Image 1: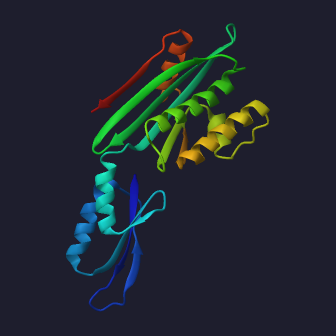
Image 2: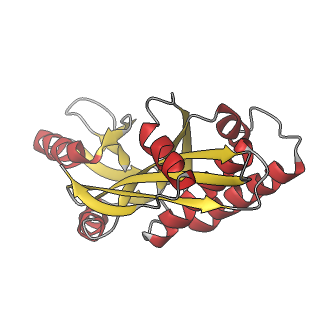
Image 3: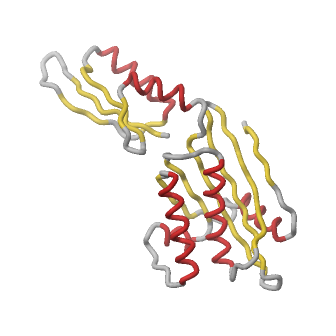
Length: 218
């Protein structure tokens, strides 16, 4: 989670001035507040998170204690593949997140029937990834969603229209789940090379090699 500071500065020979910082990584927030306090010229300070929630300094201190026990900063990778001969799809999903100062990785895959093509497999992969985000207890957070399917990403961003009824149904499901979980999505189109974890998991699913792993990483 990133934060920005809204503050009121009062110099010895100035009128009070309202200021607002750019977005800051959480690790810098306390140090910056301490530095500002040392000036003796800050009469008011408020912390704002990416979900546009506002906190006093006391409230923020309590919030940090709570966040140390909860998953935050999810980064989600997804990929889908389709085997025409068998009419089955493989989906791969990887979720990185933090809990306190530690980073975790959850990865899994699945094999699905009754899908029609590779495009539908991509949507199914993202939807199932969001179900795992829910299972991991992540709600009311910004989430970075990364995939190499430009069509899926651009349609979710509203930049490209979607004319296929089946894919529109998947779009509706994905958007409804994001809204239900209170997530604030930031979409990124990445290369297949940068999406190799999810891509490999989708391929392994088509080979009937089903995987699920959850671990703390350095």
